[in-house]
Image 1 (spheres, rainbow, N blue to C red):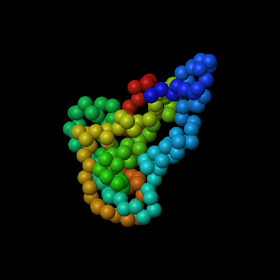
Image 2: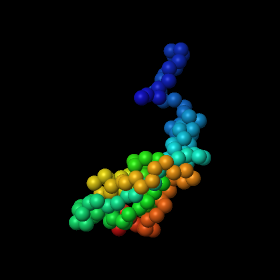
Image 3: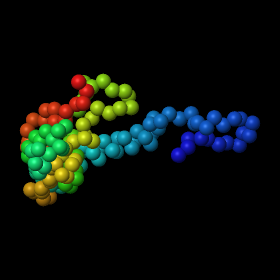
Image 4: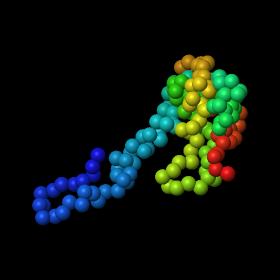
Length: 150
């Protein structure tokens, strides 16, 4: 998608760029706020389910090379897929790793909780009121993913 502008001034050379800055518009700000709210907030009166995530890959599986299993985790979430996201969101990030501005130090995308062959999700309570999206029971999340930087 081009950000080139066009006007009726035929004598002015088109530079192919607008004067706007990426991500600074009101619309971009609203989209970021909406995404953050959807990803982390629980609406008042929202009905959630309780899920248990259990490791299913055998101990010798290559999936545990970079992310050792932490055992069973119980979360309150909207769906089974959301349960994976909630569990992954509580893992520690690589905040001490030096990175460029365009690089990411979050572990959410590499979490074993998001791998259906590493963890299974089992619904243990359906339609429970008064919960917030979070980990309800589980081990303290330490360095669940090994950094490749030494």
